[in-house]
Amino acid sequence: MNPDLLTESYDYPLPPERIATHPVHPADAARLLIYNRVTQQVMHRTVRDLPDLLPPDTAILFNDTRVIKARLFGRKSTGGKIELLLNKPLPDNRYSVLIRGKVAPGTELRFDEGLTAVVEALHADGSRTVRFEHSGRVLPFGELVELCDRIGHIPLPPYIERPDTPGDARDYQNPFAAHAGAVAAPTASLHFTPELIERLQQRFTTQTLTLHVGAGTFKPVEAERIDRHPMHSEYFRIPVEATELIRSPRPLLAVGTTVTRTVEYFARTGRTEGECDLFLHPGNPPVRVDHLMTNFHLPKSTLIMLVSAFVGRERTLELYREAIEEGYRFYSYGDAMLIL
Picture 1: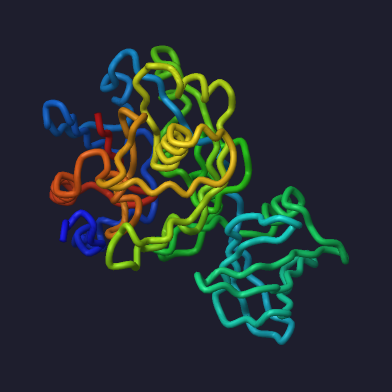
Picture 2: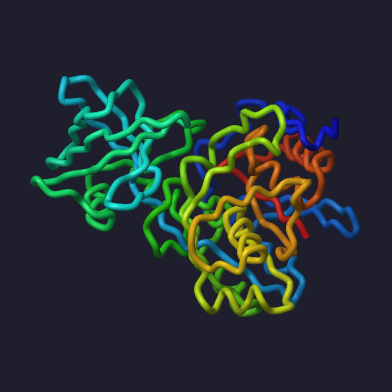
């Protein structure tokens, strides 16, 4: 069987000390591994060098989703402690959530400031459907976000094995954040400072789109074959200005896998809003995105498979090995890679 189709083919060993638990400051001091697919050259620079690395006619797309304080700690009505992670809103003011601990339909969960949640359904993928209430009223999404901003916690990825701090509310939020809804940051954007953005906008066209990153981004591929993986879906919206840019002949740099998936979904469907469930991998490569900036991702994840869609699985693993040997920091708070 073609090894590109086997999940185990996307595994690699990572020393635990290479997992970044805190970001660098300033953010654009993060290291940047550059791989040119034409020359097959590898360079090692920093993110602040980005304006000098891009072809001059490149247009840049960012994700302007805002991470909400989606992790809530509370108790069951029976007294047991509970941890809940918002995933995404559903119709009729219901919500898809993940809950640590056993719950049954009908269980009431209680949080600070009088917020309650009632479990309505359990699903095979581990998610739960709940409705949130406050003062006897079902909460719509906007009001729930406002309350979570007061009582919730930044949903740091599970491999960052520490509680969130006030600094994470700043560091785990990208500088373009405008539309609340993500429960994980579009991490490539975390490397951008106001100074770097200004330098880029002096030389390049930039636009934003929205994809609300869900908890499924951390879900490992459990199927033996990657083409049998049930890809999670996430809400997206592409404004008119970004749509025009995507339709133009200009080379595109997608800052992050979320931007890449959104652009590529539009290129295949023509849809500018809805649920994106596109799975990019070597058997389903990009058709519109020319350049990719992204962090270093988990083994056997859909994200490392997306990188492999650009450069091939074997080359991706070679680049990851070189990054490890060169001391790069991995995952959400880690360093970055630029594929040209």
